[in-house]
Image (cartoon, rainbow over all chains, first blue to last red; front, side, top):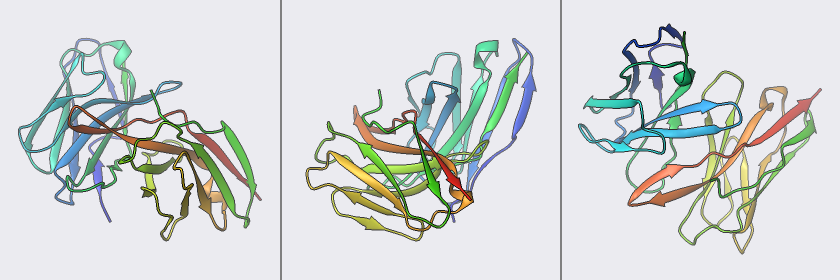
Amino acid sequence: DVKVTQSSRYLVKRTGEKVFLECVQDMDHENMFWYRQDPGLGLRLIYFSYDVKMKEKGDIPEGYSVSREKKERFSLILESASTNQTSMYLCASSLRVGNQPQHFGDGTRLSIL
Amino acid sequence: DAKTTQPPSMDCAEGRAANLPCNHSTISGNEYVYWYRQIHSQGPQYIIHGLKNNETNEMASLIITEDRKSSTLILPHATLRDTAVYYCIVRVTQGGSEKLVFGKGMKLTVNP
């Protein structure tokens, strides 16, 4: 089975802090994604990556950056955390070839105080 | 915006088949229909996907109409653990990249 692991289930940080969310997948997937999920807004794509050192903006990249130094690891960075970034963050991965499904981690519930 | 519409909620009796409908009238010829579900405080779980033929796996069956404007996810023998929010998604290719656009989904409640 595909395993997508997010480093923390719950995280509490303060406004202005630099926050790192880590995601690791064990299936040698080329594609990796970061979403956030908010009540009434569904899942929204922040950033995605098709390969090591490659990144593409999703629908809501403002206030975020990403890093993909190794194929299995995709990090989401909040450069200066703000309260409106309090949310559930979900990482996903998929194979690049064909129409392959994205597989999700269990999410990190981030609170910015 | 999501390209699919689903009813907001549905109830089903334990042990019966659950038939979850989805409309995607603007789907393009090469776009796949995906189904995911999300149990509270977990990440979305992939269930099944298809293009135009009916599909079956160990979790569910997917029936897609001939005109591809709608589909039905079938859970053949619903259990209490199938209670979740179910998302019907059309995968979009935009500017050479792909993304899943999740709508609001449908809450399925399986009752004992």
